[in-house]
Length: 273
Image (cartoon, rainbow, N blue to C red):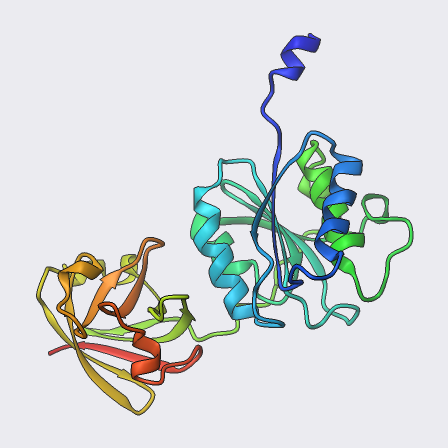
C-alpha cells in the first residue's frame, strides 16, 4: 500500500501574483503550501503581473491554465481589495480548481473550462491561525489551496455562492460580420491580444488573406488574416489566432501596440473589408 501511495503523482498547485520577485511574499506562500501539503509540485505562472492589474492577471491565468493536467489547483492573487469586504472564493470548474479573490481575476480561466460551483472561503480551520488583513495570499489562499490539493473537497471551504464578480472588461459581441471587443493584453512582443476568442467567430470561416478593417479607439488600420507571423510582409498588420485561442493583431517584426498607440482596455471593432 505504501508503494502504491508513493507512486501517486504529486498534486499540482500553480501560483500567479503581482508580488514581484524582490520581496519574500512568494516564498512565504510556497512555504505555507509545503507545510500543509509537502508533496505538492508548485509551478509559477508569473509573479510579474503589473501591480493591481486584474485584467492582465486574468489573461495570463486563462492562457496558462489549459496546459495544466486535470486536477490542478490554481492560486491567483492580484488583489487591490485585500482586507476589504471582497470575498475569498474557490471555483470548482470541470478540470481544475481556482482559489483567489472574488474580483473577476479567476473567471475567464474557469469559464473557459466550465464553472460547476463557486464557494466562499469561510472555514477558518483551512486558514493560517493568525490571518493578516494585508496578506491573504499567504494566510488564506495558499493554505486553502494546499488542503484542496491534499484531498479536501471544495464544499468544505464554505457556503456555495450564486453571484460573483465578473471580469473587469466588456464581453465580446457580434453583429453579423462585425465584432466588438477590447484589448485584453499586450504581450512582450507588442502583439495586441483581444478578448475575442476564435470560437466566438467560428461562423466567419476565416481563411488566409481575408482583409479586415480594425478600429482601436480612434485609430484605424487594415489587416490581413494570416496563420502565423511569418505570413506577413515586413511592417504589415495581420489578424491571427494566437497560441491561446484569442484573436490578436500583430505586425511582423514590429511592436504593433507602439505603432498604433494601443493600450489595454480600449475598444476594438473588427469588420470585413
